[in-house]
Amino acid sequence: MAPVGDMPTAQAMGQSFTLANMVPQASEHNRGVRAKSVEKATRNYVKRAVGDVYVTTGPVYVPNIAQSPGIGPGQVRLPKYLFKLVYDQSKNRAWAYWQENSEATRASKPIGYSELAKRTGIEFLPGAIPGD
Image (cartoon, rainbow, N blue to C red; front, top):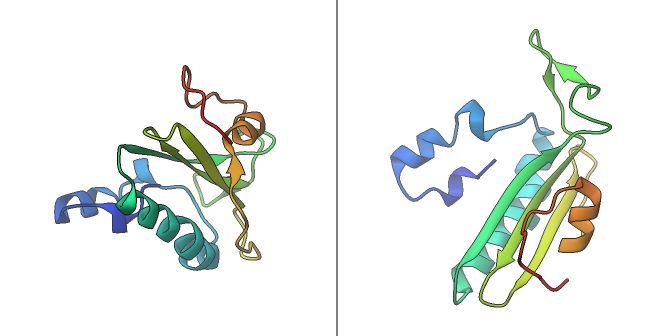
């Protein structure tokens, strides 16, 4: 789920197209809102940041992966939501982009780290106390 535009070499770009780095996404959402309001915004932030910035991207299956709809002969599961967590270590600040995996999804403001942890049930930054 790391975008090809963030890869530093041709080899890394090729490796970003493996199945380990992808989930089924609504195509218009992926090419449109996600590319412009999530990926581009994150990339621009990282370029101007002073210290290290950590980015975690992932799918959220509702109610769980086993009960999510599937596509194709292998029934590859469709995530209901996609998130991108951005953590600026030097500022101890974190936020997340949270979007429904749908063609109708529109750009929205990021959510706070604590809200992402609540929605996913995952503590992504144990030991860190990022401000929302």
